[in-house]
Image 1 (cartoon, one colour):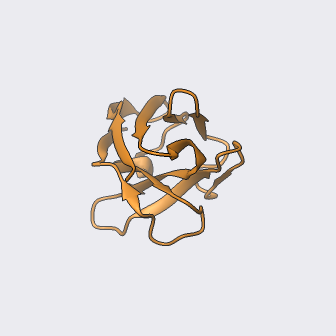
Image 2: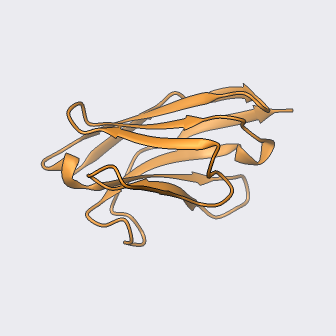
Image 3: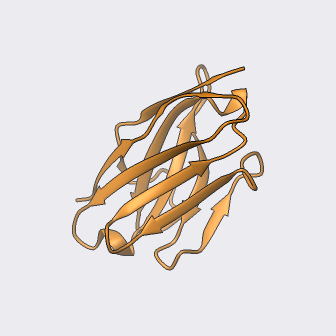
Length: 119
């Protein structure tokens, strides 16, 4: 069983930065693929970034170059650095874990943290 707890959400001005963190716990958690998803109001949840246990990462086009996903396997912390934030980045952000980055849906989820963007 993998447990995930997000923190760091809040309000940010468009063009600003925000950093989300996710504490991951559980047996062999550091061997799992970790990811960030978001759900904008009225829209389906979408995966925005994934990171393999070896640090290999991937992003959707709309955040590539602005967001950075990273992980600390020793501390079991997943991070999403959000820069040059846009109004369309607002939503509930979830961290997730699974044995494979291509599984859909992911097996383990955090409770979500709200990100609000003011223009």
